[in-house]
Image (cartoon, rainbow, N blue to C red; front, top):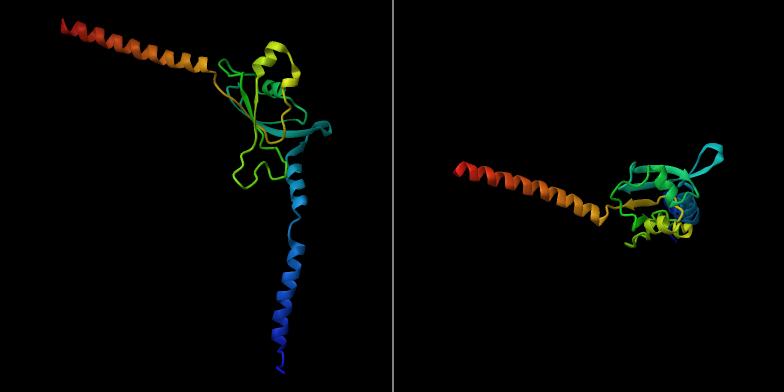
Length: 178
């Protein structure tokens, strides 16, 4: 029988120790998910829970806001100064990055996009039905786009200026020919 050297025992013991203890050092997936969700909340004055949300587009003060946890879309838009003239209130999009079905910040790692809610704020303003306005959630990004009519007016305004310049150039050219 072959004699086992002390260095061989030491190497074997070290490898065995690291292989067995690897499971102890691995992060618990459920604990990680809980921490991901917990890191999306902040504590405000009077121990009020706040969530961080983004609002972009045709809003007077776009940016990132810390708002109370049960804030609805209309209140968030009010915090941000309200919609600008030309905002498309018929289709306000909420990109629900904070939708943590598995605690993974809205990403499955398999190319699945986060859900996008479409809210008709114009309908709310016409009917007053509060049930069509959702609450914002931690990590949400609200996008308010420009209405088609506003885009059309802007293009027509530019077209008018270009047309006026072309007409002026034509008149100058015609007078120069005389």
